[in-house]
Length: 305
Image 1 (cartoon, helix red, strand yellow):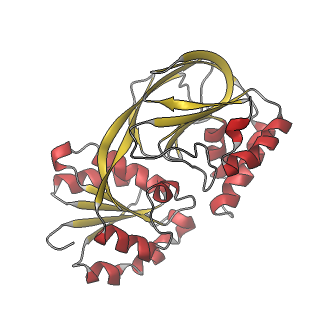
Image 2 (cartoon, rainbow, N blue to C red):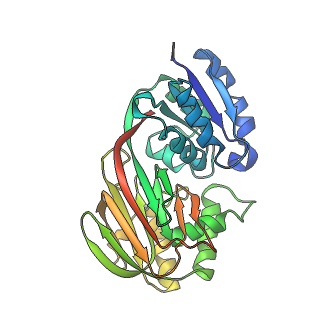
């Protein structure tokens, strides 16, 4: 990318701490394309500040080098930059799940993905904006989950010896055993409204989360609409039955699963919710978030693919 300023933001702790070593192998690719500036994250949310500052400093391209959490933070930083000065986003996958990278068609190899970023074309993608009952705002790029799958995300942090899909599978099984709780919710979208006890509801910009659970197989990050999947109150045995179906993306055929599309979403609950955005915990155990709203921002960010 001649005459373009490029900033690579690296999360050295991604992929159980292996990302820094992998990132060092990318240097010769970067030099081949005219060089870039590098920054490493040293604390949670640091990538938000680094991405925002890159926009303020006039960088044309900001490359998130890490997992879905790194991408999430970089997106939140870029979305704080005015649209007419907002850098384009690049993604080099180095995490456990890399679900967003998969959704936008990035190669699994970091070397090949970086070449894609530096030789590709910008494509507009949709971004989600979430506001919770306390007025907290957060942008998200892939999935926002309420209930079961966010509890899975919390529990996955405790399995330090697993990576990728086995990590999330172990956390799913533990959650079925220990946190099988359906919460009464009132949901309003731009299409419908309903009241129901739900084990989980996931709003999707991309088709999968957790390294391979196909929550919404038809979701695309550039179609101007979100898809969702909700699981009603079912037995633990039925949840185990649904597990392989979710892996294949065939769970929508069961009466206990509700799927649809939306552009706006609002939920209110009788009890505190666990919530994740792109695998980052927004509301965990001990928090008290019972209300949130979501809207889609079509084509809000340009990504290099």
